[in-house]
Length: 135
Image 1 (cartoon, rainbow, N blue to C red):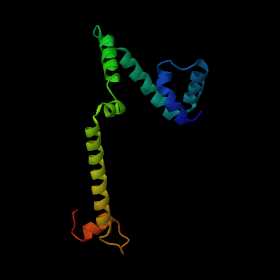
Image 2 (image 1 turned 60 degrees about the horizontal axis):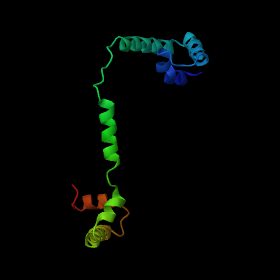
Image 3 (image 1 turned 90 degrees about the horizontal axis):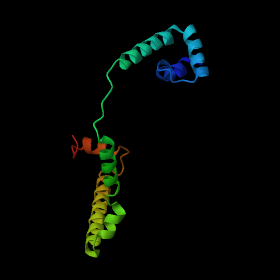
Image 4 (image 1 turned 135 degrees about the horizontal axis):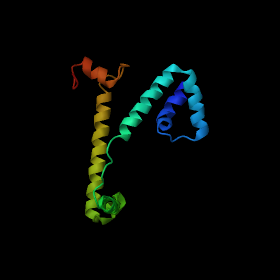
């Protein structure tokens, strides 16, 4: 077992959560590796310090409130349901707005790319060199 593999498992080792065979392999590595042994000592100290902290008291009803909020958010209408609830006029307006945005992007993209057709510089370099939009 190498140092990287041991270090990934040190927290579980320090907390006694590893199967006995794996814990023995880590113990064997720690007996030969001073760097990992030092890190393991630090993990054990941290684990011991955390175990001295008082238990967290969960407010009564927290689980039920959490489930209720989760169900409420889960039952909210999605995009497909939202689209089905729109009238035909509103669907047309949404499609028109999306099409207008696409057209504006296409027009701006093609007009900006015509600024330097023979130059291999990218668009930002071209605009910067010409004191264009970007500083």
